Length: 382
Length: 49
Image (cartoon, rainbow over all chains, first blue to last red):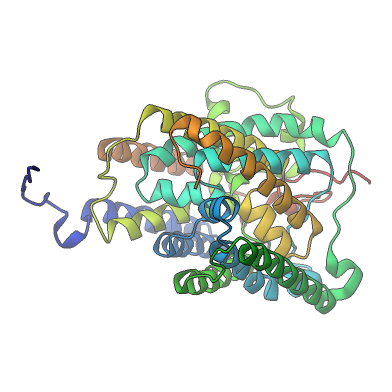
């Protein structure tokens, strides 16, 4: 026998709309846009709005790299993984040729060495424990998941530790970035990039079929993949580089640690021109922070527009512990691996950079390991 | 959880705006890749010069 308790709807949540958080997200976004426009930075406004649209798109499509990879590893299902490749294919159509032809644009490149291998592998473990990658953590935290708020906080802390570890790993050696367009020209580079995506998609489908699993992406993933790919192009157009997420986390963490009295003036990472500039300048001068802020508020607005925001109870302690450990590993791994699923995988492959595929293979291996640890925290393997 | 979110959103937003108002902002938003010698999205140098 069960007991049903009826209660009146909460004020402000009528019609499924949470006006408090919806208006907070819209007002916060408007203020950030106004602040950068006051400085005459229209491209920055574009990045905030691009991030906002990405937050809405990810939340509405429930686009999850972490869950897609887990379904592929655990059950062989390839639909979600293929949806992720659609994003890259769409983005590559603009990124490869424009980055090669215009001096005002650049692709996401990275050196290939121990840092990339270790970082992406550790990131893969972390994303399965945190239950979110860079973008996933951002939009689910923005969308009202308290668990992912914990993951995000530890992601930020981990990425600061990663910034301190990276120079030591780079000292172990490596080779300079390998970019398809450097060898094949803009259009040959694009052709090679698209061909590599087709080959990987064919391998993924073959594995799924051999395991008797579904390999067809859902309509939501196809449409979502195309829209997110187009938004990647919009962010690329506004920022001059492919969309990246996790450098913003590193900057936020370093600024917080700085405010608490930590001194980064002797940390090699923070003496490189880019990070040094980001640490000293306004957080709204960093391209990845701008899209990150937009994405959080976009996801918040999309979630609040459909239901009472953040109304679920906190998950069990073990789940929160997994989020914290996973977040730390993701943050550390993202810094060593030159980004997350967005900056390293989508951005790297869509730029025709070999490091993107190496990141994918190592992060997939890390995900396999991470999935084995999930039951320790009361999380399912699939 | 809603109360926690309200506090986090408020504190986070005040921190963003506060940092912007007290920090220099010398021009267009940049990525570490925009600086000379950068070999990665975080601005790391190339292994082989």
